[in-house]
Image (cartoon, rainbow, N blue to C red; front, side, top):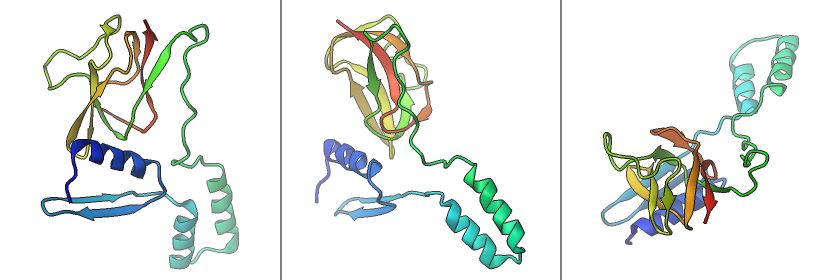
Length: 166
């Protein structure tokens, strides 16, 4: 089995939007293994109850406290353009990875606020599983905002930049 860069990107994107917790794919010259750690509050409580001798009131209090703690895995509210700026288009992350503004440390960033970009121009890099994925502009535009710091982890669908299409 051969996996090229585009195939790998599509696979990672599909897996990031699925409920699959573990995935293993082996080829002649590669092995791809993905594991997710999903926090399950009920499982933690059940493990706690089975391994510790608490009275029923303590357990009820813990469940009540946990009911008021937001779940870590809930999707964030989608980010929208600031009021009065409906003319802006959001560039979102096509995958989970680490955001880089330049090709290498110490090099000039691909884009800065105020730059004009053309279709196909590289605007950033997303590193996923040690692969550097160049993200290209899908339209001619002016960079209005860059919302992610260099070297920051990003989620699928997270807004990276806001641009004004030209």
